[in-house]
Image 1: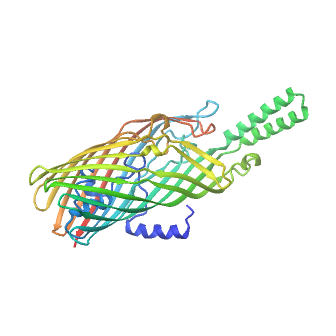
Image 2: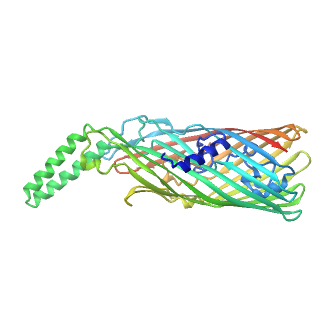
Image 3: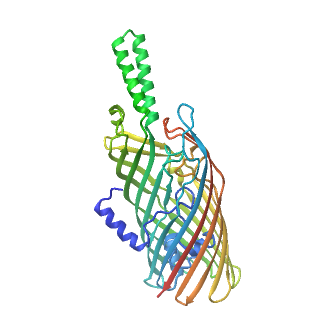
Length: 467
């Protein structure tokens, strides 16, 4: 990606805070990343908007900072290991089968990190800092797979920094919020079927020759016929090319939340994260066969480009209730405004459309239920389940994001090393519905038909220090 010096400096600083610069393999619906807390991962993020156990509440609900008695910092590292196994075929423009591997695993494992801090300015006023990665994905198909004309590499990374404040209005109600800045970068690539493009151009030239002959224009007919022969002969030797789009941008948004405490055993939280609008600026680069006809090569020039994308807003509502001194139950519901993602258009420096991909996503719901068991003064055990709705419609599913509905099964534990330091461990396995696909990126790419079997394993650790 072509970074400006300003962008590169920002990313270097944020990468230091967030432990790693890797984009995640999306484990929530769409290309969202939910896992900013190992403690939250252990109960499928049930009650995450309300429980406010540690500094990670800066991200999930800043109003929850008033539930913390001390200043503290928390850091999380997470390993996401997905499986997205494709089985199927690709039929080309003349009805033949595209050669290549038809049984591949596309999505790559990745690590992400997050850091949170809370400063206890007064008993009723808290200041917080969050550095997290709320969106991201990574897929990397090999160059010999049957769907290479639909997708090869897809790499999206979002680094989000927010500074928030929370104020305790009375013994029951707290409010919190603040601005966010996020850095978004993307890299997408796919193979280009120049043989099919050449044969298509030859067919058009031959049709023009036939029309010219019918119109008693023999010279023009001969010229078109010669062009058709030249294109057909050249196309026979043209291999695949490569097209790559890269871009980055800095956007802004905000986060606001409420926490209402009914009594020491029961509380609810409400949080809103705003959308952030981005215009990614970067380049389109193409690798073409050396003998490619100039009439075709002129359409595959390297140039600057832009693409607009909106990261969606979301609303979270969560509840926490202690049944007794050992047991607590939790729940969370999230709505995400994924219907904002309707079309992905790449515009060249000359203002012309380079590519257009219909997405037509719909809004989604995430629902989770969990429980905690305090075994003793040192150990707390937790577990949870969740349903994570996919924003992708079957008819619009693509090889870049072969998403489907997901079902979470989570477990975790916390250990208090000292009264001011604790470590958390969380594990989640995500089951997913089988995802069918029928995608044609363009008429020369063919129609990719098949199914994806998806699942994800996630392991996360967090360390919390109070002072």
